[in-house]
Length: 175
Ligand SMILES: [Zn+2]
Image (cartoon, rainbow, N blue to C red; front, side):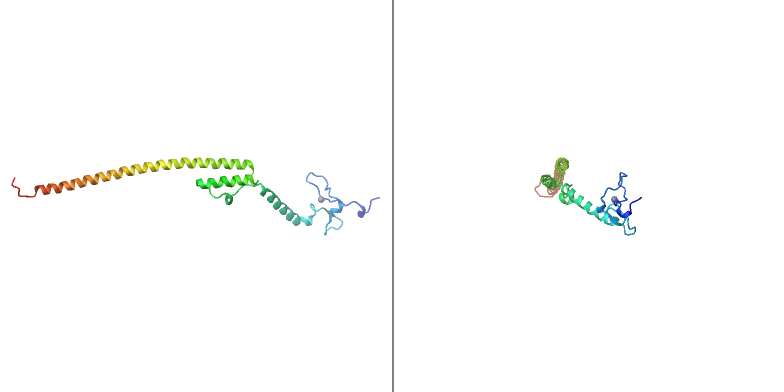
C-alpha cells in the first residue's frame, strides 16, 4: 500500500552539482504553477530562472563592492607618470592607499619599485639631455666665434683696402 502523494514528504526533484538529491527542506519548496504537486527549491525551480539571474547579479555587485575594499588603483587615482612631480604624486597615492587598506602590500611594493625605476630612468635621461645641451651650446659658441672671426677678417680687409686707396690717392706731398 502506497501513501497518498499529499502525505509524502515533499522533495525538490533538482539534482545538486555533485549528483546527489537536492536537500532543501520541504517547507522551503515552491510549487510549480504548470505542474501542481511538483515542488522545487528556489535554486531548481524552472520558473525562477530570471529571479536567480537577478540574485546572481546582486551577489556579483556585492562581491565587487567587497573586492573594492582591496583593489588596484586606476589611472584616475594616479594620473600620468611622465615627470618627477608625477612620480612624487604616485608615491604619495600608493603610500596612502596601502596605509588605508585600499591597496595590498605586494601591489604597493611592485608599484613603488616601478616608480623608483621610472625616477632613475628620468635622471639618466635628464643627465643625457643636459650633456647634449652643453655640447650643443659649445658647438654654437664655436660657430659664433668662427663667424665673428670671419667678420673681423672681412672688416680688416675692407679697412685695409680703404687705407690702400687713401694711400694711393694723390696727396701732393711730392715724394
Ligand atoms: Zn532543489
